[in-house]
Image 1 (tube, one colour):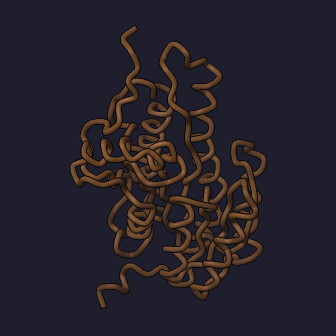
Image 2: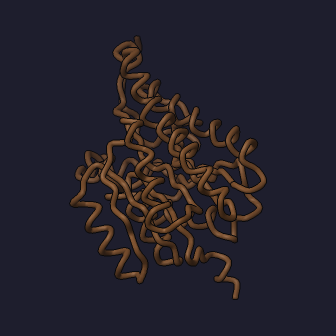
Length: 262
């Protein structure tokens, strides 16, 4: 059956930022498609809820609470995959984020923090996982990037630059990891997660964003999770080094911050 190409039966996936939003939806999508998981985030309570949901899918999830901005905590995720499952087939680098800030108020420390949290963590987790992936059949790495990595808007010098770097890191990693490990990214558009809480609780702002999105709605975490599943599954086996844009058709920002001219 054609749907069998979207299964990842008995594979093992590491998913970061898995306590809520896109990470949670991704963990559950992979579990429903047959994977066992190592899930990580800062909140043990949120991870425990995800673990229970994974178990309801008939799969296992190992919880590893961690703040991955501390690079010393990264090896424990790969260690859990090895000790609990003996393999790793999929890595989803979902952790990241940064608040908008006007250019002249973006300090060097803020800029470097955004780069570290969004890009360096993905690089280091991938490097830690690749040797274990190569002990098996190889696998797939998916980096969660953003539409602001290719669009321009005021206030996003740090975050937008970091996500642009993540997108190109994806292309560079794909070249080095081929042919046994595929590396792709998703360029995420405005998605209804806690990061957009200000918008989701303001009907006027939400209506404006939806009106300025070609598909006239915000994304849902499941929209992104399905893209991850596609890239990780046999259905995406001829894809590497690409950025899959799941953004509602955006070609310009859909919520201007209204920052004044300098």
